[in-house]
Length: 238
Image (cartoon, rainbow, N blue to C red; front, side, top):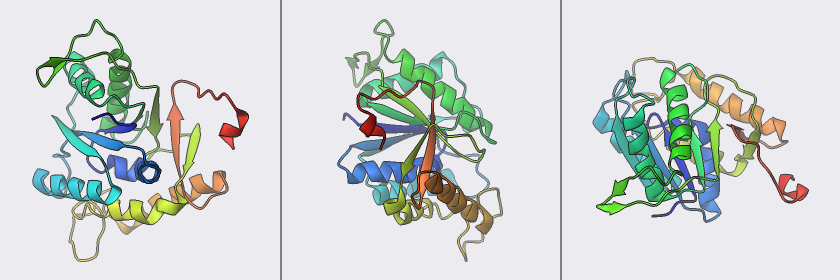
């Protein structure tokens, strides 16, 4: 299955929080979009691996994803090393995305920055034909995405690009709140954590409004890039 956009994230719910609106917006335009979660989020204070998997599947349904996979890396302890890179290279070559969206390049959670670096390096290495990989018993061809975007998460980073998600804010929030064990929902009795409070949801909306205000829209999602964006026509920026 060839994808237009592949989000590669440390934990289930990372994509929904940081780039869910962008993924939904592109799905609405007819693009084929998928998510790879590197871990099952097994170190999360609330919920279990099983509940998180069900919630991720429901969020995928709400967003309209073409595919969602989980790499089964160890939450909190996966590394940016050859074994993890090769595993991810296999998936990048399997789906052949034109664009990859990764975790924030810096953030409060150490998994996020580590996942961002792992993803960016795997995307580059996936384009080297002398790195041999096999999927489903067949040798894979080299494939390098055209661009890797890093979303914003808890820490503020000046964005290089902001996507207007005004028409998709409600659907994004539905996908986020599919994770009933992870966020604040009346009656769920989740243990308070950084993300499981009403204040976190207020922060999330405030960040989206801030990004939207910067481009004179209601809601936005910001991204950074390692490689400068080039256009053939100045009107592509309007």
